[in-house]
Amino acid sequence: MLKPLLALVAIALAAPVLGQTAPAPSPADAIDSDWQLIPDNEMLVITLKGGHQVYIRLAPRFAPAHVANIRKLAEARWWDGTSVYRVQDNYVAQWGDATETKPLPPMVIANPPAEYEWGGPFVGVTSFTRPDPYAARTGHSADGWPLATDGKTSWLTHCYGMVGVARDLAPSTGSGSELYTVIGHAPRHLDRNIALVGRVVEGIQWLSSLPRGTGTLGVYQEESERLPILSVRLASQLPEDERPHFQYRATDNPRFAAWIKARENRQNDFFKVPAGGVEICNAEAPVRRAR
Image 1: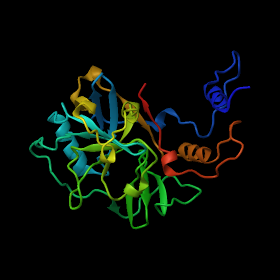
Image 2: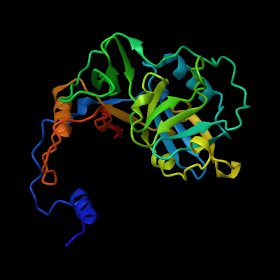
Image 3: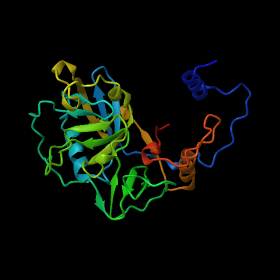
């Protein structure tokens, strides 16, 4: 008899039997027009020592001042030669200038407006069966970002892979030169306290699998422990034939609503007790490599 873990792997990886009829289309399946291309100037490409790359989709609509800074930093090649210097277990991986002495490029604003939330509730295009403990309502923007609202203000949510701007105590808001990504359980208590500027859409394993720092808050105590960053570029800075292309799944259609319902009540043979609900961070809108 297979052990439970092996059985789970077997279920996940089972290949269709030769000649087996393909499954019927589901109402939750995306159609071609649901997949929308992410612009080149909204994709950030981080190349780490060893050649591994991390791809981040930026969110200029929700944090325009911080994203403007990030674009200027990439264009100035400011991150080249910096490092990943903090990895805290079940929390975040953080990168930038560990020495905190590297001057910012001209035109980069040291403390932009606090883009933690914005006035007015969002017009959600998805809804969830069960309430969220951190917000009156959660859902997705039409272009796939996870959002929350209390009815008066709205904000992006700290889900796995989301990218935020590290900062000191208020009134600091962070320039965007020091960034982190969530590599553990969603720290939703950070919502509305830090500017979220994007989401890792590919390559997060090169950050989440790093050794944990043993210093305070997971900071590496020795310089030799830091992971060097070779380069950080916007995709629009790269030659045409080297640009990565990704698509997000649009959420403003009945197919995505059906996808959410399927996430709330999984119906395959493995699940005997459907959950009856799902949390926003367990239903992030898919992103894929463009064909």
